[in-house]
Image (cartoon, rainbow, N blue to C red; front, side, top):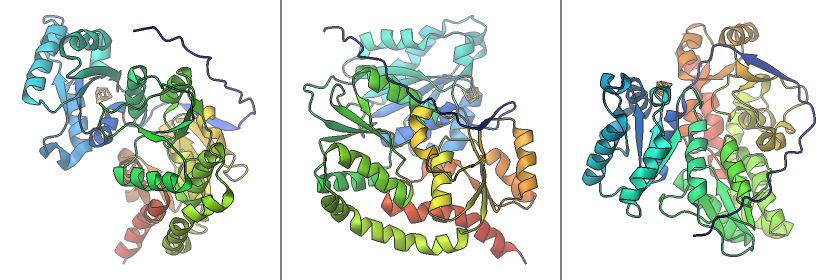
Length: 428
Ligand code: SF4
């Protein structure tokens, strides 16, 4: 096997200033382990083994809810007191657990060792462990590792770290012909819808990353065009660019406008003429617009406040303001990566209050003062704010539900209507 040289480093030419309120303080967010909940559903031959504490196991159990009863493809190797005190060799213990797991579950094709706060604190080298285990189990099982710890990752960054760990093992593209790579995990039904649209327009070949089976890795190299479906994949996109892929900057496929702009971005690269493009999207656009109408009427003119959680906040705010007529009080997000976000930011109404990071008490004060009609926030804040009379939307649902694309545009709007409707119905 020959070593592959890294191609040129990705260009980062964004220089324009952006007025953003940057805050650092107490945060109310999930750690990256939560990503396992949707990633294990997407990649059906993968298993996620968290190397962590009981706290980590509890987190995944509560986030995954009833899924834990359906022979899930995730679990926690719990570091006991003996491991933490250095009395046991954590590496030996881990090898034993992996051996047990793989003998019981022959269906596993890829095993992710997922780092956590405790495994990081005791400096357990999971990269080395993965390497050792690969010697033993590859090619039957491939072992990869990434960190989902709260020290290093916030919520959806867990997916970024997971996909990032797969980039080095993607096969190299055999030619320089253009090929589309859609990056970011999408529900299978959404993936199928997009695939049909690309086929109708004549865009191809198209591959999706992550794939449905972790063993079916898409190739990457010169000619690969990256169309990013989730805005939180900073590291993955940069790693793919280092392997020669080209980023197609675009708004994200939320709502009719976002989806059209996203598809158009790919269509332009493939020189698809306007008529063919319109012809392919027209039925879906008209369905989506009809579906959206009734929610637009309810949301129009209402005020929205978004707390930072998933990095989906900016695209969602764009959808709520431009397609639902909502007024944006504040759009908070954990991080702003200009490389992946500028196409979205330029669509926000001029002067939108953007905030990056969090000082939760200060942000709560701003929210209470503004009395928004809908507050998008994590589960930790939702019930307390409801008790104060504010309607809230749990942001976690925005990551778990299939919301990309035309046919899901109305479902997306409905999520924001539901909680205020419930409050209205319950008010006597
Ligand atoms: S990884 Fe860290 S933040 Fe996440 S559940 Fe485990 S201990 Fe908590």
